[in-house]
Length: 298
Ligand code: F3S
Image (cartoon, rainbow, N blue to C red; front, side, top):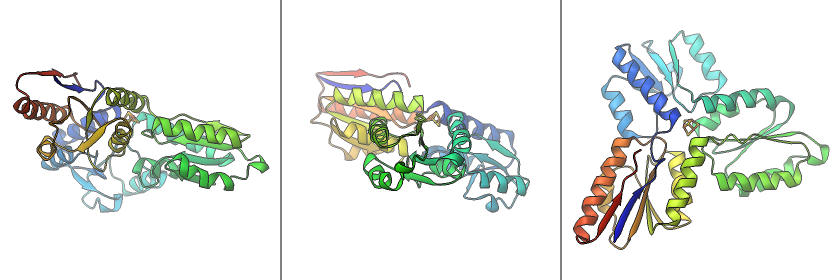
């Protein structure tokens, strides 16, 4: 019997929901608005906002017509706050409170220690966090990359080290990094800043992948947390990352009996439902006599 199971935690997290609600509220208010970078890594939401008149700018200098500027959940570095203040633009700050906490930790602890950030240096959230750090700062994507930084930490000199994580960093990779640093740093302050929504989503995705023959991970191809989910699931079973239901027609799911579905934090519930509906139709056609679905509310 074929079975489709959708993860309970699939879809929007609290911070993304808050930012999306703020942006659509601005659109409804009729005040001209723009987002600093695409609001979330989901093409459909970005297109809907564009149709509602909320355009995307890449820097405060591009806001030549004085629109309200919406800061997305990833946050921005202090220099961008300064540029926005200097421009006189009205600002709606939708930085996720978990990311704001990281900014506070970076500002508070970085000056007196070497700061290590576990995360993707090109990701806007990490660029924002690094902007709040004073003094020596290193960013690494994995325990393997951390190995190259450890020899330059000068722990013989007893320098304090502060360890922070991008909110969507992989939990197993973080644990490996912490273990490595505990062995070599005498003064190590560890702040586990991986957000609870990420932890829950990752652990549920792993559990579901372990019980499945294949996993469908729905999310934007530019979404870091979606890529992490796909990577984690890929350790257990065949895993397919898709942005929309239309892509299911290019996959051959016929050989799989237990198929799990999860989605990144920037995937709206309507896309998850469309994927589930399309999968059900495709699989029912292939296996008319035995079919069971378990759709969790997301
Ligand atoms: Fe915030 Fe966590 Fe989402 S940091 S934006 S609630 S993944």
